[in-house]
Length: 466
Image (cartoon, rainbow, N blue to C red):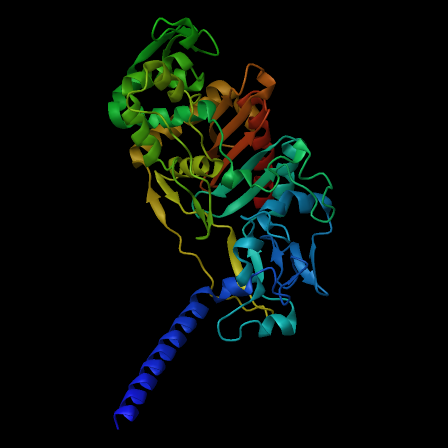
């Protein structure tokens, strides 16, 4: 009798353990099943490490960027289209980790916990994805870079939809260069510079310093003036002098920003101090990651300025030349907030997912809105950035665009041709609410080079919107 009781208890324990294991496996299947399916060794989805079974990826106008045909993954027939949209779409082997084919692979394949891979095996097609990206605008942006490394991004600052997102260098996925991993021409080719690039911001950071001044010193700072003699001697040490790009003489705040006066902003940020400058930088999200469509994360920026930093270090940081590194997507998000009454909307690259019958699937990503700065501060900065264009960059260089902007020239070494050129801003236009960022490596001067690139892309977008 005792033997039967012991056996009964033992069987009961085994049953409980089996049930626990079953529950664990079921939970794991629900939670991680899509990851299990999307392993390179799964021959239902991959062949020789290449994605073969997935739905089409199309741009916002329906142009096919990638699709599966007869068991092979094929890209758009136009070479420039393939190259310009590669970082948005992604490659077949997943080297470009931020491409939609990698991030949304299980959605594209059509895996679900009920039918598993049955639909994949039967149709070899999966779900179709429509992007917010305009492939033709991406081509124009890619050509505008004129062979330089860099990135161009344009987003609707009301909706958060990304219209343009290109990164260079790129390559033709249909004809992968043999020296892609050894030729410096392709350095960082698998990296989407818009999302994962980090750059010295140059004078675009003066927008951050402007916001810091407005929030800590109030609007009275707008009535102040500084005297620029080209050289700002902070501590009596010649090697530490902050050098301005011109001898501007007496300038008020508006003139200092328009002329990008290093002397004025050097003095101003030294007055503000490192702690206030750091607090503003962090508040504006420049040291945080930007998330696109809930799943694609950008690289967070860096602001290593210490509380006990020397005045000259604070001054150089305030004009955007210190050790600060900014991600283009984060800077674009700040531009959206300034344009949108201080509110930054979350970025999105996904329009819709549809099954093979054309029915839209309920795969959506919750949009949110963050108040980065007050509406009053946003309005003031908007006016200042508008003045930059009318007083300094030239309205004639941006015909028909009610553009607000700030240029930046990040000095990499003593050779001006090696500078990183920035141009950031937005259109103050309710019918065309677009914000933009342009970063061109070895671009020389910001307004002249990157500004012209921005103009080409924005003019093309407005032409399409007609």
